[in-house]
Length: 269
Image 1 (cartoon, helix red, strand yellow):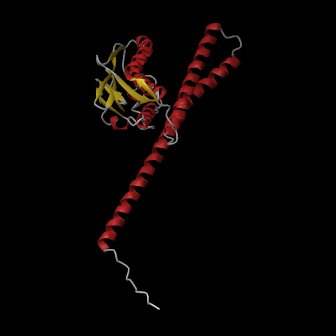
Image 2: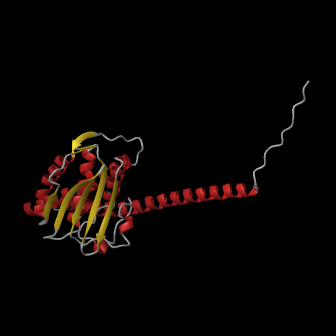
Image 3: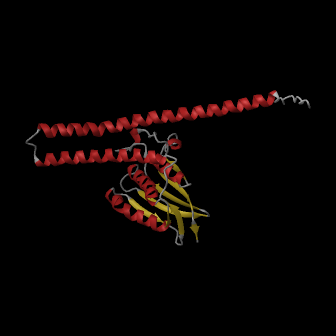
């Protein structure tokens, strides 16, 4: 019977083992840091939502109490109270819709309803849908598209309009009467770049890197009126990235902000 030969196992040099261990520790540290950051963002998001939910809920409870107590309420006061309740309920619904949509976008199994559409037609339709709001808010709204703008993109139209609507709403919220809001687009080889520019209060440099975080909200003292719920830009970022695109912002305090969205071009002729 032939004897089996004993093969001495190869030994890994100590330097390689130390290098592999160091790399594993770095990866573990990064993973822990990511988990910690995500947990911190979740807690901050819950705090923001708790704060935002408390105000409309308190107003609704108080309004219902007044309706029960004052049986002989004047018609004008009665209508004002109903209008207040309607506005608060609308805010609550908008907040819950944003939470639901953000959850959808962050679900890797959530599929987009893609369609091949003409970019110019979508932007023009969106512009006309915003004219009334801009006029009511006393803002100047402009649409700037290239003369020759033949561009097809494959997107989920409803989701992309949601992104544009969020950027437009932010431009309204952080600007003042008489300010200008410009919706524009240009072709950059294989990409379509859409931008929404305003001449409002702008964003502070320390706030700019965090504006797309789902739990972040700038200093309330610089926020005119309703400062939003801190979810809109996070939703916009999730939608754009799910389309394989990118979104970013450039801003100068007291001069205005410009939000950019870049999407892949399907056909550019």
